[in-house]
Image (cartoon, rainbow, N blue to C red):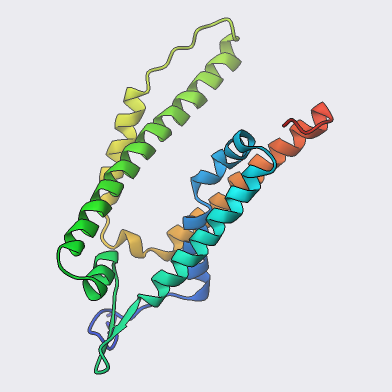
Length: 203
């Protein structure tokens, strides 16, 4: 029988380590956005692209440091941990700003879910069309509807959302971090292969 250990604030004792925290950070910072990073940098050029990248890295560092400072709130008697964004806003700002924060979070969540659903279906369609072209040749239209893949992805999301404490699975972030490094390496390899093949770096 598993013995439950609680923290000083009555919640289950935190089990995070440097390894799991690093995995969470890598997953959040790198993420799937790295796949479009090369294209985005190309749109800005070799000067503005890296400059904007460095600018946003500073913004990320600044906001992360600020957020970590807000993790604990002290009233000189007791120190309270803020586990969510709304807890931070409630402890530091209060009032209607808490509701605004919650509303913005839900709007962001809905937007992210819609975006990933569309992106995943487009990716699956691209794989399907690629296989079709490989099998039948490029003279075939290979029209594939993304609707079924969007529905499939939505069903998978609904199923996974039923898993209790899904966000507490540390191995999930480790797998995600490995995946982030994997497709980053694949993207880098494809870029190097393109340069080797053409003999020049296209601007």
